Length: 345
Ligand SMILES: Nc1ncnc2c1ncn2[C@@H]1O[C@H](COP(=O)(O)OP(=O)(O)O)[C@@H](O)[C@H]1O
Ligand SMILES: [Mg+2]
Image (tube, rainbow, N blue to C red):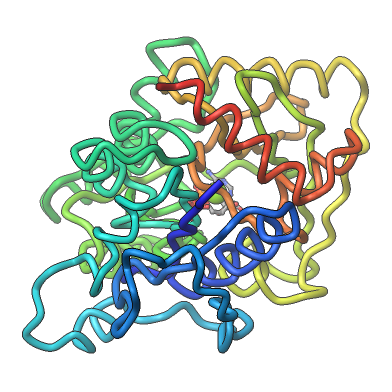
């Protein structure tokens, strides 16, 4: 197939996306596809668009490891100066030449349904879920409303739209609590707080990122994540940061987090989490694949946190680890995602 892998973008998860994109690009190339890796935001100049899939340059050249801190989205946006078009040079044209676009974008303008909607209008087929469920899952407040409506246990939460709601949020949730920018990802805009002052400062930071802020009950216990591929749960991974919680650094710096797959859990708990992952997938109208995050409290009750509709896709990432337990290697997983993504058309 002639495939475009879309990566980069202008979100705080840009660096993670480039690394996912590079891995998917190399995997699909190893399977014999003609693959072009594009930075959706910066695009590419001076290329022969008509014959782009014959261009055998190394499209992943220069992509670096993920840094300790997340990139600054405003800074990335400023690099294009007066050019207000989100799509970089030739990106739309090249996508329209492809048989398929593999989405390796994370966070805003990538995982949130906007590009999916644009690709629909361009009549280009892409990986992962559709624009509607992408948008639903991007917003943790709306995600939780659907969890509650569908009987999926999730930590108690309260959303505010202006700072006036702060006192009520504190009263409703109590300490410890987690303050979140609902449209974030990679733990950017997630604060675990123990005092009113910390909560207030966290809220201020979250309002810089979003127009509403989520206050959530803190769940003490173990953390897990469970991929769902074509509606069926994969083996579960347990996530244990060596220090602190599963923040940006602990997510992407080697050795910061112990990840165990399959997770060491009693069979009934495993089956419960997998069942809840499949239910969450359905409740959020997700198609194709996703990764669902869970916390397990000391009474062994599992709480669903959120769904990631374009989860990390390096061979070390969580879904690839889960697939590997089933004997599916990374290039096979990438092809499987393409195969099941085509079913949505
Ligand atoms: N209610 C909670 N109680 C305890 N820890 C939490 C809670 N919510 C989030 N966390 C921690 O913060 C991390 C990121 O939160 P999450 O809601 O999954 O957002 P993101 O989209 O950034 O991954 C989780 O992986 C977990 O370690
Ligand atoms: Mg998460």
